[in-house]
Image 1 (cartoon, rainbow, N blue to C red):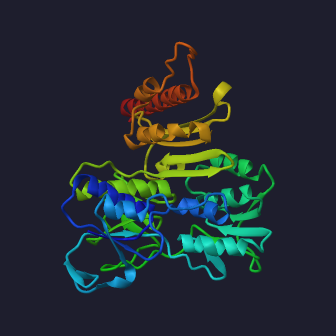
Image 2: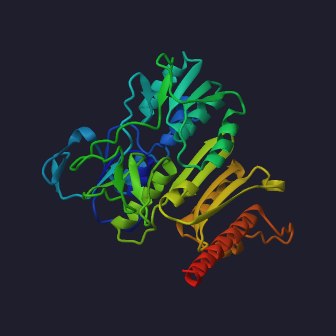
Image 3: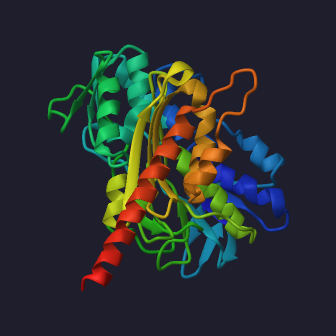
Amino acid sequence: MVIFGEDLAACLAAHEIRKINRREEVIIVRSSRSIGYSRRLLPYYAAGLVERAELIPGGLLEVADLVNVASSEAVSYGDGYLMVDGRQIAKPVVLVSAWPLLNRRGAVNILTPEDAEALRDALQAAKEVFITGGVAALPVVDALATAGWKVSLTWNCEEFDSDVESVLINELQKGGNVRLISEPPSDAPLLINFGGGDPPSLPLGRGAAEGFIPVDSSCRVAGSDLHAIGLATKVAEPEGFKHRVACEEEVLLQAMNFAAFKVKAPFPPLRRYFVARFGGRVYASFGLTMGEAESIGYDAAATRIRGWGRCSDVLLKAIASREGHVLGLQVAINEEFAWMLGLLYFIVLSRAKLHEVSRAISPIDLQNPSFEGIFDKAFKALLRKAMLRSLARTSQRLTGELNP
């Protein structure tokens, strides 16, 4: 198997495969001098808030996982085969760590640690910075605003419904260091491109459609024998809805799904997993938004609730089908509660039933008894709405049958 890419997700895919399969050769083809770096950490690295962006050392892969690492300069390909370091590899499984080709003219494009170092040099002479990428670029906004720069962000936000988006906008603008704009000015002193660009040309295969590389839950590229993970991909969900991958955490889920596919292990579908952090707060969107659910024919119900007491800073919006299955969750919480995100994603991933969810996450603490926690209350309220909607539909159907 040949993996084009050296970032954290590419290395995780190789590492996961090696846990089970120690026989087949795995080759990582890298174009950066660094390996195992997190793209989300690159802005913090550029701003001097973290010392390094690498999370997986190359030596670990080569020694512990027996993964061969080759330079992209040592690779060439022809009709159905690859040449790596002078060796021919026929019909390899090819995984491309597909990040957008960020090529906005006049901008600093952040893909690799080398780009982050270039940004660090550019920041020394800048008092104000302009960023493209919308809500997906919040890691850059958070890093630079924390380090003291005034930030202008070109805004778009398809991952949240408008009511939750308005809350996020208010919290972004609360401190005064961030303003949202529709387009950066032509004379912007420093323009940073984090979330936009063209998908890369895939080796041994066709390019992307509609600005993204379409993949399924095994990360297979539509109409191809290639597999791809990364922010340049768009995932087809089981119900037919397609969502763009917009944060590195979901790319890591892609990497694990691909690894499971490669070793013939079961793997779940991929539903949207979007997480952004700003100012000690976490904003997450899992699964479908209300608008998306309605666009693909769901008769959906939704409820939005704010917390109280210890959870006073929690905002939760839940979306469910009229049959009572959870379709999507949008949440804003303090970082101390970020451990809950995995549980909330599983609820969406498994299309859990509302009455089961309310039991599973009800607080059971004899020292601090609570009859209604925020999540429990939200799911019970949504269950009532879904049941009323289902009863109304049944009533309409029966009325129509009695009065044709």
